Length: 413
Ligand SMILES: *Cc1c(COP(=O)(O)O)cnc(C)c1O
Image 1: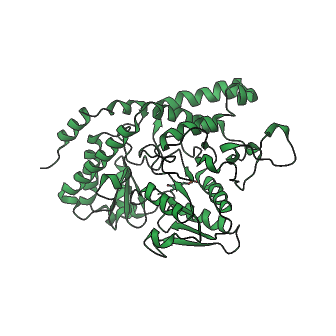
Image 2 (image 1 turned 135 degrees about the vertical axis):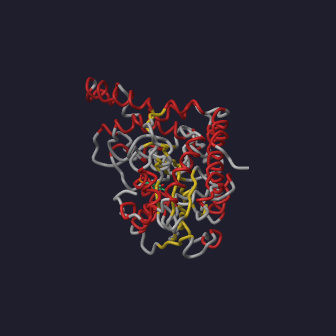
């Protein structure tokens, strides 16, 4: 049985989360399938950000660090992100960027296992994770790295008593494959290693329980599925049991026990705040503040349910289309082994994505040949998926890859 547009409209009419779409500002004529790169603008953020600029900055001036509670935003927002990742309060803080937080977490974790010199990561991980890892390794003489997909295809082979830290993403940014966090965390711990989870592609769409699975560290960004705004600050989670012993390398005044004493010597503050470095952008933090208000209210399990159903529907629509037979579904079929994205392989994927964007269907492309569609369940409708697949089929029918203008690469893909 072919899924029709009417079937999709019927799914929308039964969707308990359908009303959430109204909370986002989406341009007319656009179907946005790139919520995993930059989340859409929450309408609420427009008001919150303009109030922050005009009132808190304009009228409050320097007083707003205290009077508008700018100074405590990193920890307050951190607790709200914590709720989404299964972290009790006091262990998560919103600050800096993901790459910087990976560096802090890596160095802190390496220093907690000083007699071990091997880091385990993954060849297919988002490149910045690997680049930061290279940089962190220069801090320890004799440090080396084992990569999943290069040195072995099995984490069991890679993780032994020489390993200090395991750094992995729970959702693969290219394929959308979701790892078993609990099992892998235990694998690391059984070998005496620590684990750092990169949650960039999962927080806000995949429920998880960092405390319960005894994760050590986690990092993630807020501008993808959390809709915090372009370049909004990231977060870092450090399990409470490590707080006293964990030291991050970027000791700055915001992580000082008494920042306004302006002492000459660095004394780290207690708790997660020692992972702060310096002054944070109050404007950017307010973007996260406004965006999290949505997540304070919704049930993450309902979000996950719709996300899985959207991805299943998208795959079904692609596979039933006679024109799209040349596409290979790269993402796992089992919804429990997949994040909130569907990746399709096609050797001329880049021109197809570019031609789709020209028709208002925004997805993105990652080498090699991967057309990536991040399905944010808060603002996507089933009919959007139907229409997007029709546009994709139109691009195939037109063989857009034979036209030069679609093959020329943009700076940001
Ligand atoms: C998006 C993403 C990043 C981004 O790092 P930034 O420092 O925010 O640029 C890092 N890691 C993963 C896995 C990502 O998906």
